[in-house]
Length: 62
Image 1 (spheres, one colour):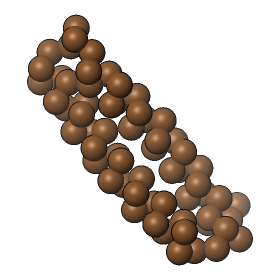
Image 2 (image 1 turned 90 degrees about the vertical axis):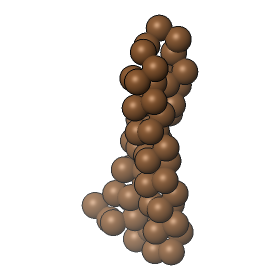
Image 3 (image 1 turned 90 degrees about the horizontal axis):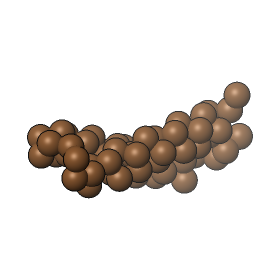
């Protein structure tokens, strides 16, 4: 597999995971501590996604 394709695949999986954490951080049934942890994980994942997208844009996809 090419490195660019791997980065795209990893970025897509991280987007799904970050969106999952972000949505469930607003669930009212969870405790405040659990919601803060999920929101923190989502923010860290979104920052990691931004760095991966920048790396993908700088490198060719082949």
